[in-house]
Amino acid sequence: MNWTDDLQKAENADYAPFFGTLGITAAMIFTAAGAAYGTAKSGTAISSMAVMRPELVMKAVIPVIMAGIIGIYGLVVAIVLTAKVTPSNDGYTLEKGFAHLAAGLTCGLCGLGSGYAIGIVGDAGVRGFSQQPRLFVGMILILIFAEVLGLYGMIVALILGTS
Image (cartoon, rainbow, N blue to C red):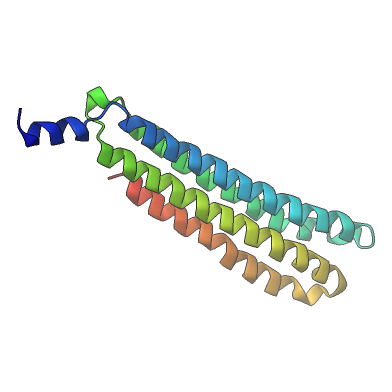
């Protein structure tokens, strides 16, 4: 047995699918946490705003919807990665496992940051919008810029995951 056999054995390690599965888990957990934070933070602002201005509730729900989309990004990446992770007997290598881990972490952590930003902007934006309705367009633009951070993470994760 020479060193190339040892290298081949290490590349086809039995624990390689663990890292791919860890990437799937990271994508779901972190994006769901970001979506939950964005929903909770924006939702409490909507609830407090609705006491005085109930006619604005439907327009104010937009940050909650945008936070929910972050969770969908994680779900899409998790489904794509789930189709790619196979047993190590079927040729699933450590390289693929680490690529899928990186994909899951990229999507998950971008989603977490995006959800956090949407929550903060949604909270302040909804409260400001209830007092000055002309702030609505500005709030939406800032929310779009916060949302796109999660979208960038999903795009990079899909590129990493399909390798």
